Image 1 (tube, rainbow, N blue to C red):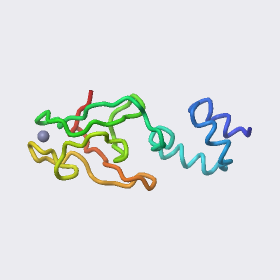
Image 2: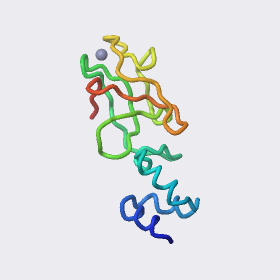
Image 3: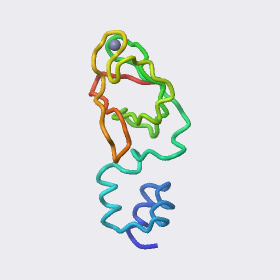
Image 4: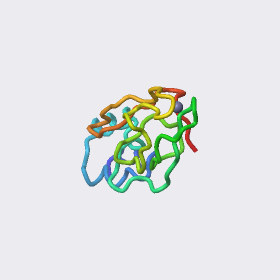
Length: 121
Ligand SMILES: [Zn+2]
């Protein structure tokens, strides 16, 4: 195990296996860290816990989402949305405000949430 992988595994325990098995270079690992990689990486199983995401202006539910981590909701990977209540992508079905923008995050289709437009619990 090289030092880069050691540093990673102390910060991101779950990343350890993937890093060693793919034998990524330090540079690649560094790029992944800079992009917030580990926490944002969509993984095949995904988080099990779901959160309900609401429009912050009218409180209409927008998604049921398998959210990883504890932080703020910055983006939603489409494959992790377990229930989608919107009719038009990124638009609240009730007050018709845009709450997100479509984006590709490392090749995975996702929605980037617009700051302050959604709440979740
Ligand atoms: Zn709304």
